Length: 211
Image 1 (cartoon, rainbow, N blue to C red):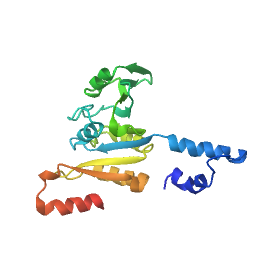
Image 2 (cartoon, rainbow, N blue to C red):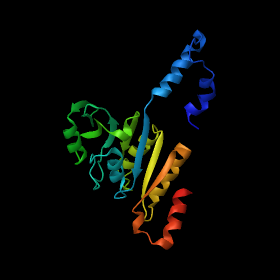
Image 3 (cartoon, helix red, strand yellow):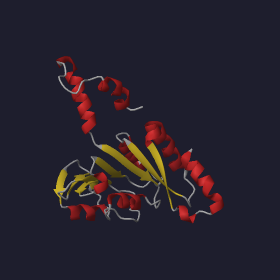
Image 4 (spheres, rainbow, N blue to C red):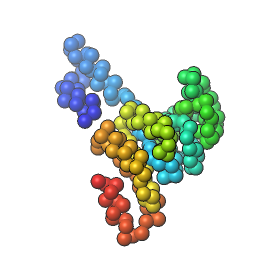
């Protein structure tokens, strides 16, 4: 249960008008939760279709559909009528860039860039939703897993993309367990390439994702 859910009974007891001074701090807290961005973090193994899902949700080819491997930056998509992008470099400095430059950086590893945020008219994200792409889980030195967990800790919803024709690696299973403990019912599995599974195995695949 997240903090907002726990506080909901107290929030609902606050009147909409003529709020007493003693309740003003709680009212501001309530309004802050109401205005906060819903963060949807997408993660999964390499070549599971994670970027294809994000491109489909955003309605534009914002991310490369081939795995960039280690060094993949965090990419966050947000809605705005003014297309633009910002980057965070490895040394912590930030810079504003054009949306085209942001897409170019997202499509190829730039070692000095660790995070890209892009704003554009994304209809799916218009209701204050942020869609976050994470590095593919490779089971290497753990840097990708650390980056994913860091994003999951600030997530409201997590989508783990699975490929129906691939057996989950040990690192994928462990990350799924950790994410599930962190987010509970707010973690969902997206099963990709379901058309590649034999009909006789389809129920087994879906039962695993549902369980």
